[in-house]
Image (cartoon, rainbow, N blue to C red; front, side, top):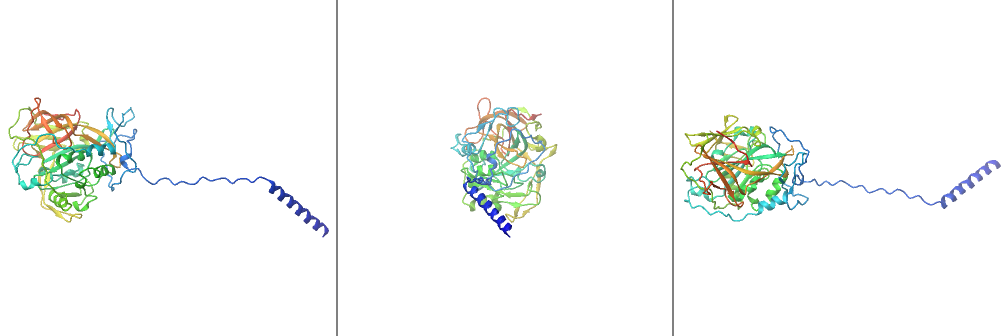
Length: 449
């Protein structure tokens, strides 16, 4: 026992010694952990993204899939001026072009002043867009601008083209200024009609709308384009069927072909929203007298940069019997339909018996206009929307009565109509009837035979 007691005493003394040393030592600071930060969940809207300089150019035969999402206001402010960006050999934007961003576009399209051209005096029952006599009550309404797709699957169900007063066709959705396809804006004023298939709007519609003081109807769209249109002075007359479902009806098929509406239904809808009204349109000069010009029996959009592979090789052939140019795509007649349309708005369409006929126009006008890129991503392939400069002046070719006239177009402001003049400065008259505008890039001339 004495040995055990001694051993316990030694252990106790040793423990006390270690404790005293520990008490005199400096404490060691524990490491400080940096607080964990969550990444921001606020996604940048498409309208603020810059075109990547190294993206591959899509095949001209590849058709985009549109983004069908509601509009979100951009979280970041856009530059106050469009920033020029040159290609520099790495893809991207061609030299001398400007990339348009959100704020400059809104500013540009919001400056709507009074028209500068003098008005044209005509009887109350003459349509200023066609020069034809119509029921004058129809001219007491706003024109309806309908966005119609030109995907290959859409051409078999196109409707309303021969009932429109004007048709504008422009190139859409580009990478490195290579365009995917074309799209149409049908302008209805002097007739009621059904139209199909509705697709999404683009910046070109912001340029056209002030000229007509009308109503724009479309279906779907990118966040950038939708937000831009929502900020413009006429935004209450911008109808998007995906957001305002009661403006449209739905037919069987995929989204490229299923959406339809009618002029009368659009007029009823805007009247219910307090947006109906009358407009005072200058329109165009018209004459039944055939002009002098060089023979033009066919006009073909058969070479780049027109996207003829995806849009189809488009040819207009003059038909002396009707006095009109008939539209062909890939050698076949391009047809349109006319029928009554009702059903449950916001639900299924109910189509009446259809009348099928080839698309025809009294006047074919090729406008050379400047295309520049925006930074609005329009589809899942990350193609970018285009800004089309449609004010100022430029070259034009006018085809009517089987002849071609070289002309100059003028449009001082967004509220002005296009005015066409010859080499002497005299205004050129169009033939009474439908006019089809092909918005061709600068320097582009179709193949004329």
